[in-house]
Image (tube, rainbow, N blue to C red; front, side):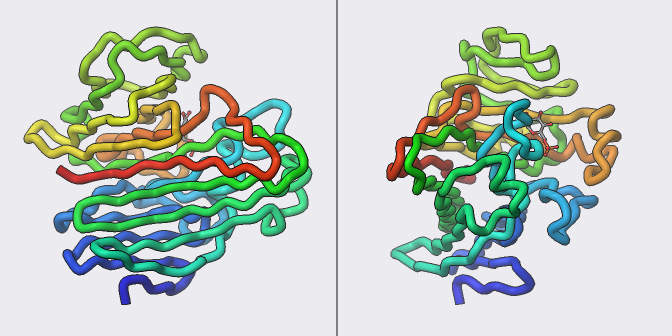
Length: 282
Ligand SMILES: O=P(O)(O)OC[C@H]1O[C@H](O)[C@H](O)[C@@H](O)[C@@H]1O
């Protein structure tokens, strides 16, 4: 079977040997193996029992990014903290595809009070031999326009973050969350990490490249419908402050997160928004 559900985790396997695992908690992708290598970072201290968002993989951020003073939801919203429905598998040509769904009636009373919209989220995860596509559709089933942010908080696994660079961000305006949200323009062709990094690059191009080491290995990111890109590494002090992240693990990860977070997405009543990413191993 190309997809199997066991203990609230759906595993997809592809004839080539690639595979992906998705936890129904948050519809969080928690493993992606392509060309015999794990491509995603999940902390050794990640909590996998549904009591906290999973520290690693691809947590799905919706309907807020960070916290918002006027919306009483936890950081990054409820999607990554909710159990999603598994909607089944489709196999087509050379790909295996599974879908997950979340509706407002699956939220807690507190969550619905904090964000009182009728909506339907559908998340599609598609695996090929060398790529992984994660794609979200948001349907507004309310009578009013709804506003949201969303982001795919991808944690890439790397051997040594000192060797990593992200290409495609030059000349973009970014809000630097390490400097109280101050905005600057990126001057570098290759964005590297040598300290805490938490930057929201606005209106990023749809093609980005992550050099995962200095030996030519790359993951190409192609985003669709998502405007911005966040680059995050907690570095030493923040790593120590996170209970579900090992003190030294900041060496082994970089988050490059595509999303629409710098401005609200406005979605009219009855309409559907879509956006996502395709990650390809080179
Ligand atoms: O600890 P979390 O709620 O999962 O957030 C982890 C990180 O997510 C994003 O990358 C934000 O830009 C960071 O400011 C935040 O620290």
